[in-house]
Amino acid sequence: MLTYEYSRFFIYSLSAVVVVVVMFVLAFFLSPSNTYNDKLSPYECGFHPLEDARKKFSVHFYLVALLFVAFDLEILILVPWVAGVRFLDSWSYWVVMLFLVFVASGFIYEWKRGALDW
Image (cartoon, rainbow, N blue to C red; front, side, top):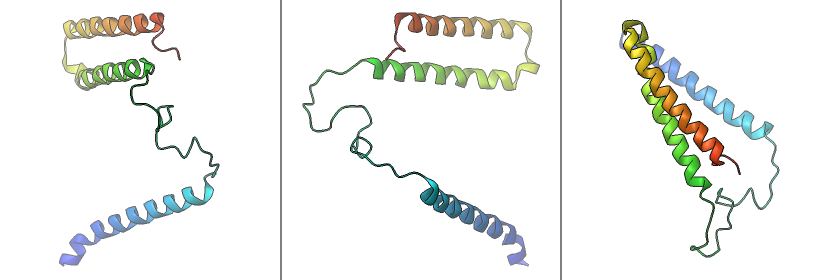
């Protein structure tokens, strides 16, 4: 009786493990293996790891990170609003539209200033 109750769980767990193993094996055999020195470097920021630590680098890394955080917070605010939009009145609709105008104006400002150009 007890094994019947857990049999679905064991079948589900076993099938999940089999799918993961099959995906890893397929990825290992089907993926191209073009190796070169830049690809094997431990850093992805574009700088050589054995240079001076006080070397100046582009501020674009920080700007992209800040833009990512800003739009991530926008999604964090918009998802609950979209989930409950049918229960809200027109006032909340216009408040969110004003919020989107502010976010879009900030994005356009960053775009016009060249923060997204590399």
